Image (cartoon, rainbow, N blue to C red; front, side, top):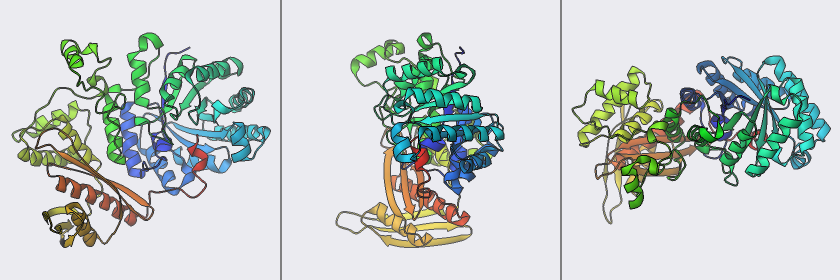
Length: 522
């Protein structure tokens, strides 16, 4: 049996449909391009039947992203499969991923179908999908709570109908590692033809066992892992792909398995997802958390200074996190700046480099030392920048103890300059209210955070703002040594996204009632 493990990324589908993580088509494209740099084998671009936006995003990713196979999810019916094919057919390597629930509770309560009807629907779906493409994956939703005898029957039928990948999901994170490993082993031993297809595992993290279950499945013979960056997904999330990739790389001596992923792209991929969604990972998150390579206890610090291997089983460099403090300042030139970007793994256009360099020089005038994290924050803001509809000219806030804050904001739109004055409960509220007056919107402020990117009194501040207008949720990000300026930049970035979606008629929000529920439990 081959020791190659295929990485199937479902950040844009299972991850994106969890609360707070919605992405529009351009954001999905940006994320998919980075996933291609990470060298995942399959990108599940969406659930095309769920909404016009999901279909558009899948089509965009299929047209623009080369390298990985591009998959579209479909329930086991012709309408879904046709939509999935419409979404991915332009891909270099299209895949249709069709599924149906197989556990007694799902068949009885959700599908209201008998096992024989489910079996027939699965076979019909795989056959139809196979008539459209040679790459067809079949999943038995809630497999770990399904009858093993029925699983063997439906998987055998799916293989005979033409499925090339068989996926075994632990949909509700119910299994333990021993149980899940035994299930995979049993299926591979008892299902005729399972040795001729790729066996896949899709584990959720409801009991915190997703990574352990995934590794147990791989030990038992599975050779494809389905998961997401940062472990995002329904409820407690999916298995975090960065954990699986680094577990296989770090413990290859014991597992004997390897992926083709470029692990040095892990950190940047994680940071990009945070930038797009506005949701940070917890500091103690394995592999990509802020504290993953930090040492505070004296005994740990002493050990690391003597030999990093005393407490670090992998290096920060192995996930693309530079540990050397690249110090850049106001006298640094464009060539040095470009070299730093290259070392960090960024592949930017000349226009993006110019924008980022301009912001860097502005920052360097305010800070004596500009470090790696500062540069990464600036570049991520510029690369994921929304359409430049309104631009900040300047602002002023008058506030103090016992005074009502009053803000003046000046924005440019094309050749026109717009000014508004407003008060508020605080300086930030006053600034946002003034912006609202200019742009003619009154969105709900869903979330607002501010943090220091680096240490020191002159630290770069990063603000992340989430706003909602009707069915549109937009995330904005801004950076500055002035936290008020960072807040204004973040809010304006989110406003520009809303205005751009209004202009293009595209919304990012809940799917039509009853549609996504079929995929959300997969």
